[in-house]
Length: 455
Image 1: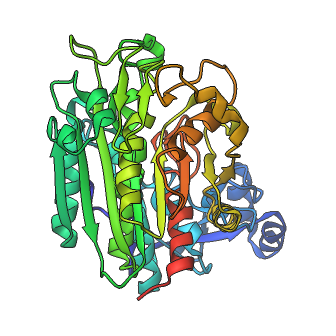
Image 2: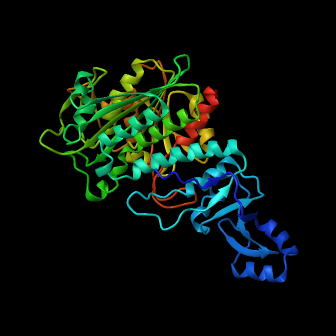
Image 3: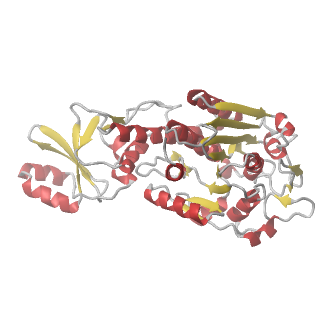
């Protein structure tokens, strides 16, 4: 991960940024010289969001930046690569969200293609604010890097190495069950999904925090590549399936942020990791798997594999009786049909948690939308030969039935939130370059801060 920071504590000889909306620009124009007005007019600047203009004031060059006076990622998110490389400062008091926009917009995935230039840097004199924003940015970068890395370099074993390195850095405990060890742990579902790959499936665990603090468990779907299994995806459907471990990437990034910011929680991270491949021992439609919970699952579709990874991990999490379980997964296309690609679908039994998470999503420009755990739809998961079927044959309510499937593997003793996310930006917008994205991460972290406080 690139350690270059787009935020600096001080910036000698920095270029000044002057933020103006339309009315501010009109006032500024009244005091500007005719030459300055001419320069700005030639650059078509009128104070609209996204506009910028260079102008000379006495012996100093400044940049006029158009904005709408809103606190959002878009204020600065487009600037790091639109402005020339160098350092900038502003007299405008910038918020955490605006600085996050700058930092998120300064990201680029350069593992395989060197950057032609570095992003611009902005001065942040408030050291406390700078450190927090940098911590959030680095966790987002980590999630993005993991998602953007192709499956050839992001297999289950690579995911294990990433989490092991994180555990060593944060002095956390680490454990991993690989291949047939999963059968010894009665994790038949995780094993079945990944057994056809040359890189065996595994369940990766990180633990951190003091025993007297509340227990929270983060789980992330780690399908490092999803061919669809024997129910093979189309070429177009398979093209971006390197991102099918996006839930794991988000959980890992969030875990890093929790540890970095030393939230007073007892953290457990569980990542079931597998590549859904095809070979002679691939699991098949019609197979019946026995899960850690003891429930049997009939396979209707091998492309509904993510919930099979999660069900064993959820059971293990629930056995420890934590206060809160959160899982993240690129689980269903149905969730994208319901809320699109920019909003995270959220499921929980708790009205209070849902309300708080929604509010944090709104205030942190990380939108979440609650979908219902409609119990009547459980009938869509009925099997004639097993306790459950892994995929409903109905074409309706796919995201809901997937969440209901997961709900069967919980006792109800812990609060639970399930996020069905895209984990990918289909296009570039301010603060959100095309590619992997740590969706729901910032909203969830803000919720955890609000709920559990800080040391």
